[in-house]
Image (cartoon, rainbow, N blue to C red; front, side, top):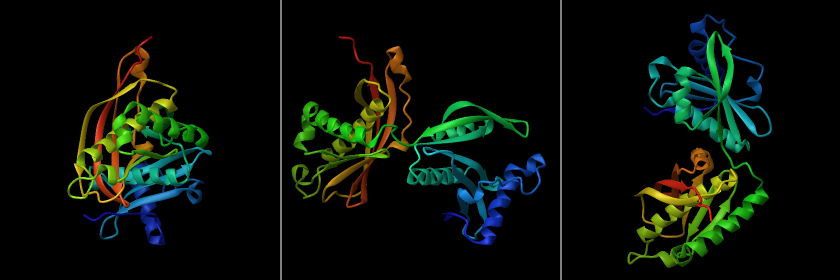
Length: 301
């Protein structure tokens, strides 16, 4: 099936969009037509998934709560299309909209039956929410961006660069550079010349190292953002090479894809975090690195 993910445009699409909302979220509790809409519709971002025939089968909405926070509401998937990943498609698109709007976090209210879905998507339990139609709901939150200022992020970029070159000599030989750090992502680069192989493309070990160090850098930034410290080590790593790299390689690691839980450090236990890094060359993805990093508590001097 070739799913079509978009915002409603035509009158027919809007009618079908709201019909699915009502059918899934209101009709089972004998709520009247119109109860599936509220006063924020015109000021919100709407997304839907359609079949090849134009049938609307999944919907969701995002609206701003304040300068830094957005809320997801009215997530619904047609009963016959449950289990096809359509809800995840809508949610990921709404998260992308939130990032484009400069939001730092998303909140949502979910019933118990949806808790697993949102937890799998990286949402953390926050607090009880108001019940709806007698059904208990709970508030979840997901952090999309680093919480600190752009000025501090620039300082961290310089500090991370020095950390690489001074403590990991291989990074200096590779001429690895911390290209940018902003609230949404970390980008590290490595030029072709010092990493070239006999085929005039980048050495596979250099690509793996770029992925490892970009992931390591993301964990380092996440710790800094939470004002924590620890020794970061790679516990397990895997890479898929998709295409030869014939130019500068760029490792990109997105903040919103990672959901750190460093609470174990407070009990002097190690914490773990799975990290994903995309490797690009000329904006074409050439490899995917996935690593499990362990953060060990700093030993007292």
